[in-house]
Image 1: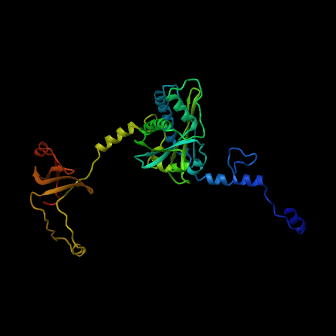
Image 2: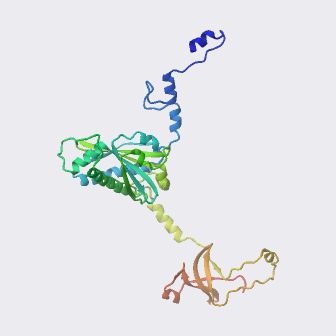
Image 3: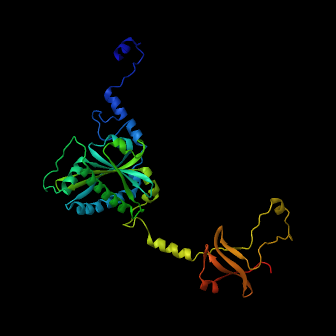
Length: 351
């Protein structure tokens, strides 16, 4: 068609250039484009630029490093075998893209972060499932786990994998403990990715791939945490790592506590409060009298700004008007404190 158009065109007219399939694939960032590498290009790069990179949350990588150390010990006790746990990769991607790439057969465990009121997903591949079943049921060491494809998982296999999931969730809770206390509760176990949807397909998530090796056996565990799940602790994940205390500065905390204890605050003793029309307020002038409804010996309030601190009674002490405190924040003081209370004294402007 381009040749016919070129032959029938006027000598001064330039024919329209038609892109071939390779150029179209390169423009759209198609993974099957010839000569294409792992680096994305074209519109695919623009689409993925909307995702938030996990590298903007420095503490998140520290939490997962802590998870690897804890899991190495707990899985050794769980399997009575030499277990090595490592992080293959940490990446950001959309939830729908990950569900479409889950290698089946696999088990998908849905769990909930109780304090954060949101969900996460854990995926155990078939290699790790059969390895765990073989190890826990007394399989001989030094032999690869037998895989039987094309059949559903038995109830025994599901129970053993559920124990593994709960163990990993406990370790994940312990990993977040220095940062923010959270409990990850196991919800259900699925084998179909469509039934394990915990958020919208376009939701940005953090994917952590863990590799578990048990001598010549092992497999992979994927942890998928939507950014909506991490939102309650986003401010904590943004801080820089400073030792196992996760950025806390004891020197600054001590200095702040000392300064707070020596800070002066202004207390107001409220004798009475009245509501007056604006017209009466406008008629007030020097010499006008406002009658107080409080009777002698009635309780008065001691406030700091708008916060109620104490209730007490007006009296005199050393030729000064004083307030004897009787209650504090709605709780009665001890009798000994009432007998000899600390006095808040002030000097009236007029006698």
